[in-house]
Length: 144
Image (cartoon, rainbow, N blue to C red; front, side, top):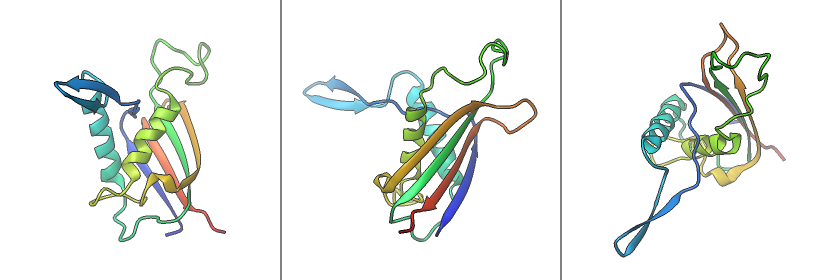
């Protein structure tokens, strides 16, 4: 496999840091609170469902490019905010996607996300009448 392109529709969700929570004598790490874990899990499942079936995931170094698309709020015209300079953070959006691309025994296109040696991530507002919100993912093998 030299390169693949994947497009996933839906509202991108970020993956923040895990929070330690004490449960009796044990300390557990949880992914956020409220409905955040459910939204993140739904987003990850959407990404995994869009992945091509591969016999062998990328095992060597890869470059990854991500473009996140969000609906522009009606209260924020282009003249007020041209670029998406609000949350979610682009690095946390990328973390959720990279973890979803990692082979988990059933689906995945990367043997491990530590194989990513170059990452480009961009977030933008959807142009009216254009693409829907979601993410476009490009993965390419790094040749020596």
